Amino acid sequence: MIWMNSIYKNAIAATFMKVCTNKNMADITTKDITEACGISRQTFYNYFPDKYAVVSYLFDVAAQRITEPLSSGMGTVYSTIHAMLKNVQNNRSYYQSIARFQGQNSFEDYFCAYSIAYYAHLIKKYHGEDALTPAIQFEIEFNCYAVTKIFIQWILNGAKDPTEQLAKKMTDAMPSRMKTLLSIDEAAPGLQS
Image (cartoon, rainbow, N blue to C red; front, side, top):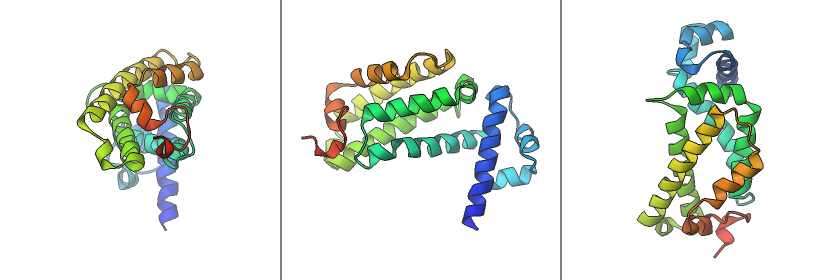
């Protein structure tokens, strides 16, 4: 029965993406989603409390797939950032719709918080709890806030700039201690001394 729940959840999420390609997220209602999906409001609420939860779910699913190589020690930070940018380019209309929405529950805030938590998790995973010093935490937050602003602007400008170049700029701009701990250009970040 669990697989059935994920089928419904994924169908609602896929429909939401389609609705977002034709309408700004701020203007989308639960009714828009349920009518496009052919479900009742109650069915929608069985899976998501609101449209913001759908955005979070879609991002979490994509991020888990994209970050898996890095999380398992086989990818690089550069390749992960590049894959994230390519995913956005391939779903440009959807990401433009959700990036336009500002304020509470914005994709911008969610992306930034996710990035901070993910980098902190990687550093602790590969180097131990003590490696995440207050100075490193500050570098992570500083970097993620800056990268998020650039990322959102890139999306709003049409996500046209080459993903390879932007991924390189983002990794090059990381603070040096953060780069060392994350092994930017090498797989298996835990093996770097």
